[in-house]
Amino acid sequence: MKEFVYEKPGGVEVIKRIEKDMPKSEPRKVIVKASFGSVNHVDIWGRMDLPGQPFPRVFGSDLSGYIDDPSDSIFKKGDKVVLYPMKFCGFCKNCLAGYENSCFYRAIYGVHVDGFFAEYVSVEAKNVLKLPENVSLEYAAALPVAYTTAYHGLINRSKSEPGSTLLILGGSGGAGVAALQIAKAVGLRVITTTSYDWKAEMLKKLGADEVLKPDDKLLENIFKLTDNNGVDAVFDALGGSYTSLALKAVRKGGRVINMAMTTGSEIQLNLRQIYANNLDLQGVYLGTRKDLSDLLNMVSQGKIKPLIDSVFPIDDVDKAQLRMEKRNHIGKILLKF
Ligand SMILES: NC(=O)c1ccc[n+]([C@@H]2O[C@H](COP(=O)([O-])OP(=O)(O)OC[C@H]3O[C@@H](n4cnc5c(N)ncnc54)[C@H](OP(=O)(O)O)[C@@H]3O)[C@@H](O)[C@H]2O)c1
Ligand SMILES: [Zn+2]
Picture 1 (cartoon, rainbow, N blue to C red):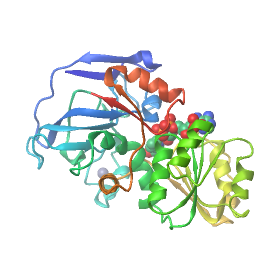
Picture 2: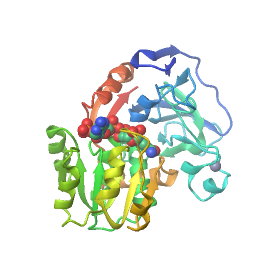
Picture 3: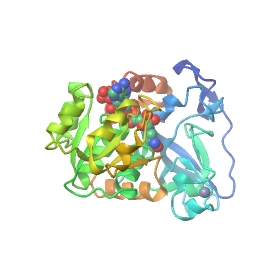
Picture 4: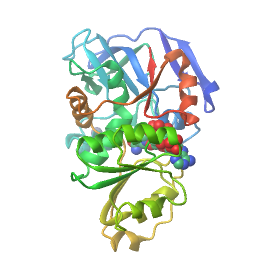
């Protein structure tokens, strides 16, 4: 069978397709035959020479497919499944509370340990979720990283009141579109952002109430749209100077949910701005298994229809990553095995 590895840190040229023996059956693990994967920006960060990213390494964090060997699990051969992308212990204080994304021993598959982009994957049965009958393998592959993180930030960790106004920074990416769709499904007013007119049109079709450019008029335009009060909450999928802007764009008593550092990982923070305005600043790192399960139900009930930008054969995963790096996409890029 073939699997896809990053040979060493670098550009897409470090992606190698290698032949491997089929994984062997093991207790507490199942073997999944891959159907669809999807590209996340973390796949691109994952090619960089950052601490905690071993090389060579199988990459890929989002995967759906069929159970090929259920071993001693509750699954049956042929079950349609999706994989939860966080390796977790199941026994630490946070796992027992249902927060596997804060497991004391966590690692992201594909980033910190070997990931999922192989024709057959051996994975812990506790990382496998069965799909509702009417949820497609394509939609399922779009959910684990981008949608689950947005769901965790907007629904699990915070109370997003219907009718309240959410600003999304980085609104056209996988996570940004996920946040828009989840926010509209629970009745929020959404102001979102993109630099491109064609993406703005798409975001309006998906239900965005307002779409702004992330330019030097952004803060002024946000205040114009909120009677000078600021938004109730920000979903910050950009980081850097945009996080500083988010802290100014939010109303007194509001909330900034940061989940990215696309445009920078360090900011200057005036603590008075946080405490004197009763602000909540939340960090969000993936989501929980329950978040992913809730999302599968939302897709099953037709409340969310993941936005699929394009589908590439897995052999063209380099082209798919370049499409993302060049910002030519909106929503999720899928990979077909
Ligand atoms: N915390 C977590 O667990 C978690 C989970 C998922 C993702 N993330 C992170 O969240 C970020 C988004 O991930 P993704 O997979 O959704 O990526 P993506 O699909 O590539 O989305 C990129 C988004 O960022 C915007 N953008 C990129 N560079 C920009 C710049 N220089 N100035 C302004 N806007 C810019 C793009 O806007 P345009 O419309 O203008 O192109 C687009 O909306 C990544 O940094 C990723 O690592 C974190
Ligand atoms: Zn744990």
